[in-house]
Amino acid sequence: MIKPDVLKKGDIIGIVAPSSPVPIEKAYMAKKNIERMGYKVRLGESCWGTYGYLAGKDELRAQDLINMFADQEVKGIICLRGGYGASRILNKIDYEVIKKNPKVFVGYSDITVLHTAFNQICNLVTFHGPMAASNMSDNIDYFTIKSLVKAVTMTKPLGEIHNPKGEKISCLVKGEATGEIVGGNLALVAGTIGTPYEIDTKGKLLLLEEVEEEPYRVDRLLTQLALAGKFEDATGIILADFKDCIPKEYESSLSLMDVFKDVVVPYNKPTIFNLKAGHCPQKVTIPFGVKARLVAHQTKLVLEEGATKNG
Image (tube, rainbow, N blue to C red):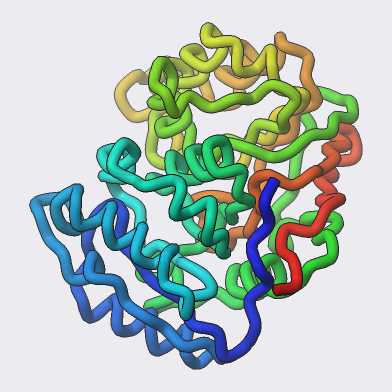
């Protein structure tokens, strides 16, 4: 895997909106807060874009992303927010530009499809972590920012990943597994099945998170991955944060844990639940594409390889 250069204070960070828009005031708030952290910030054209539920038309969002990678002054890229739209630009991205200009790339939720594409097509290590408007414009969480900064500013392995205080990780299947971490949002991962951007989980640790999907919908998405062989191929499974995935429509619904036990546990792969990555208020930043070790019975996830290099 290609590792991006480590970020340093004073570096320029680009902000792009590959998915949905936000009021420009939130983008400016995020810019100021990131500048307070010691970085310079360059807002991409897509940060001003609006086309219905998208931050501008597909061509604008794709070109803005490409331009940020091509810009030699920009050392890292943070996505503005998730929402919807990243899938629409997958076939409009010049992946050769990204291969030739590897740099820190951060986001989660709808950004999942870009992580998968950059990991598999460009062999680029990326970071599943907070976004500018979603997590850095207001109500900034210290734990979240500390985890992000640590992940993108050190070249040595991150070691054991720790949850916020009071958040316990559970073991669903005992055992130990190693591999690069891949994945992201469950709905987006499932949406890649049958496309040229289908996620490859062979020999990998598969991380999944979700938000506001009822158990039966989580069941449907997990079953799609199961039928596609993704759990069988994986060495281990990290069920991260499943925020507000509670029954609403069916009074006699299965619980989220029932769904995990029915669909995931039978594969007997080392599995943990409640690693705080995803839509939770406090979140850890997880590099995708570096070697990690999952010791499920000890509820430990250990990053054994650095995610960045000295430039």
